[in-house]
Amino acid sequence: METVTDFSKESVFEFPLSFSIRVIGTNSDAFQELVMAIVSRHVPQDDQYAVSQRLSGGGKYRALTVTFLARSRPQLDELYRELGEQKEVFMLL
Image 1: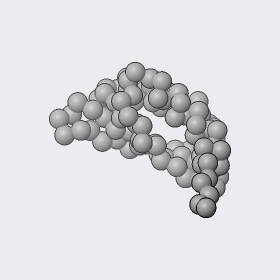
Image 2 (image 1 turned 90 degrees about the vertical axis):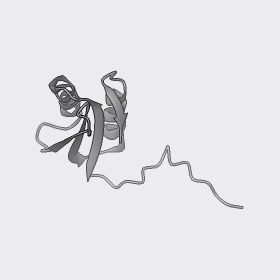
Image 3 (image 1 turned 30 degrees about the vertical axis):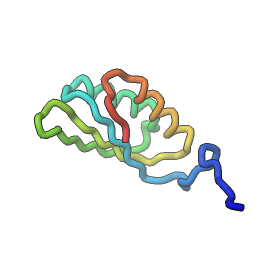
Image 4 (image 1 turned 60 degrees about the vertical axis):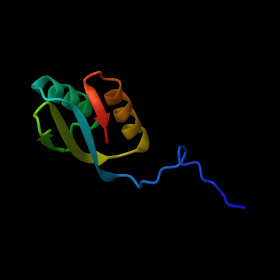
């Protein structure tokens, strides 16, 4: 019989690790400010992070990629949860 692993309780990551999150939303400075305010609440001030952005072909959407040192699975879970609750965020990768 095959054993099925419940990955919801296990982490497939080894922390700390360099982690990138991509957030897609409207092409506005307000969107970028919102995302960065949320990221700064979940990433310690002492940690540095890199941000890159890309616009959609028509310029209607903006994708922000933030790379930072992730310290734990709960940190990532909370970051994804808070970003996912924002109406300005269309997609998280």
